[in-house]
Length: 489
Image (cartoon, rainbow, N blue to C red; front, top):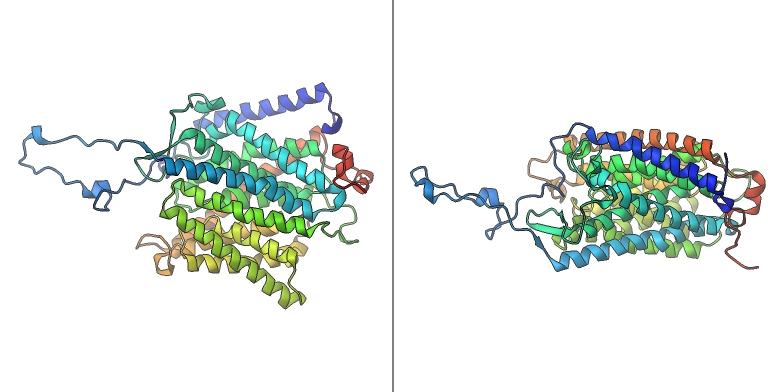
């Protein structure tokens, strides 16, 4: 039966609960996937530096062959240490990522739609984020990070079983740990913002209930496997050496492709291409973009998991790349349109943030400037020329900025990580080889997200239908879906 949450009955709730239960039951058996050899940086950290600044394995001196057996001492595992500074930084970073979504992303999207639909977008962002946070606690975390596997983890921590105040999560340093609750919370915000990003692609014409059903299904069958493949223990893309420091593939390409598929399947807005559909409040959009920029320091620098120079590198790269992208977008607009716009500057900031995300922990500041500038120019083309070529009504340019920007950033990570270009790669780093690995990760993410999104949209369409009626579009989703308006006239 079809329903909308505006007037939902108990039978409808039972139908949705049954669908979610079936989705979870289908996914859990995937935990038996053959384990890959590669280990996550979070699960197999690099060797702890010694006082001489060398890895522990290299610094250790083996006992002479003639030494008595009694003198040989067994190697001791490093004692786990939790630093208060790391804990404080990671909790702050988690709050910054939450700030990106609420109110950052909500205001950025809200200002871009018409006044009769602003509350619907704010609601979709807030409620989708909340839904994903709950699902993350129930089964998302364990399937993404709860054990080794090429594609998926295992259900050992279902409902956060076995996690308590003494549980520790690994970092990139062998003897440095975090309280597992902090790591769970940080990763929950990543999952939530990824699903919330997608709502911009079908804004102003989709049913609220369809958004929630789609989000739950896509999170389960797309976000979780991609996150595990890139960051989880034994993940396939991690094992082959793909670089994604903070989510270029996991978050931005993933969401951008799902948004593009949604724009096609939900269909165009009433009047799209025939009448002007201008943003109703660019000041709101500017405020939202600024909050996103501030919060993104937690997103990128927090992915270092420690308050070290690695976090400082991601921090400075996030600053410089974003500024370069703002300037590039404005220059491009001034050259092609005659004037630089506020909307363009805000969009350029997001493009720069997206592109530097996978590279922020492995490229140098000059590489970050180039990545940001290129992203500004390329994403400007993405929301103009490419958008016309694709013929999809991607309302708020989720694919043009996040999808295309994520692809640009992922590929350029393979270039500017080279030490000869100021990156942190090893002396034998090969640009050609790494770019090919990055390209494989991009292609896998695109295909996986497109297929999973198509199926999730179709299931939501079968259950409740995707699109509101033309009359409801004319009235506006604020009244139709939520019975209220953003502004009193």
